[in-house]
Length: 481
Image (cartoon, rainbow, N blue to C red; front, side, top):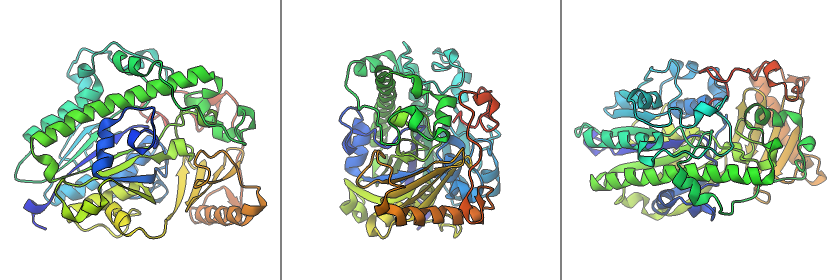
């Protein structure tokens, strides 16, 4: 494929957007007309997962095509190692003639290292430009940037960071080098907490019904949940203290911010149409991880439950592409991950995919199907899961706690099957897969061929537990992403 024949690629990511927040894919409570358009004109991968669902590891997986447990980046402490030691998606594309641009949140360390991009503009540049807005997008009244109570703001949408991310992306489309194809990564900070929608979008949802938080036979009360699973919630966004009405309001604010992003994307897509770019540009939309949003009394990310690890993944081909016409408006239910973005983009660009990546081409998955992969999830070396077909087995080293779900029949993870006689073999098989994985990694949590749990968390004393630092204001916070 000659340079002139290679397509443009626009990768769009949100931060902390769970899988079930798109109207066209079944959520009748949310407005997402432009994500719906991507579903109608592309492929929706309905079983996409973040294998290490926290900000830095997820983005490192996008950049390298390798899972967190492969690179060793499973927490926000490992900021630079995977990107400094491995080839990156923008680096490979730049070397093959692409103009590469990152616009928005990257969460790289050191902050201004480009890791293969020709040019990077960060949210910090929005502040530098001196736009007159609520300086921290609602952060000024928060402590850890993870509060989930509604924080509507009277800042006009056109002056907000969401709009700035799109405006600067549009500026790149207007000024890109026409002699080269381009790779643009448009990356939103939102809907990451604090949930701070513009007032007009908060009004849109303020009195609307929203889905109730999910409870299960293992999570009927906070006290029934293995305490290790609640530790990220207590550290970041404590839904265990919120009433049903407060949880519903939190969800309304979250939906408001997602709609804000969607409406801004309409401007981006409209400008692409005006410039004729929809005819030769692939669009990929996803998120780095999800948000528990009160399900099972949990908030935030980090665990491998559906709200945290299950993410949206949409791929829209260039408009006239005959080879993809049969896939338009379809859904693919094969398990895919963020590691698949790098090989997909390289394949679209006609560039050889490195042999050592964990991912595979999403288009090949959609076209040929095949057997689901077995995926091991590892976040903070404390929250583990094995995804195999419709089954998900989870275990936490924080005091222990085994759960087994059949997602085909129980997508809300409400029935724990780990002690079911019918599923005893399934539990043992997936447990053994995790044990063998941890043995290969030299984990301290396997002894004599069995899982060996660590101490349970200290309730409410997050600052005294070493893995959850009390200071959440700096770049080294493992949860800030």
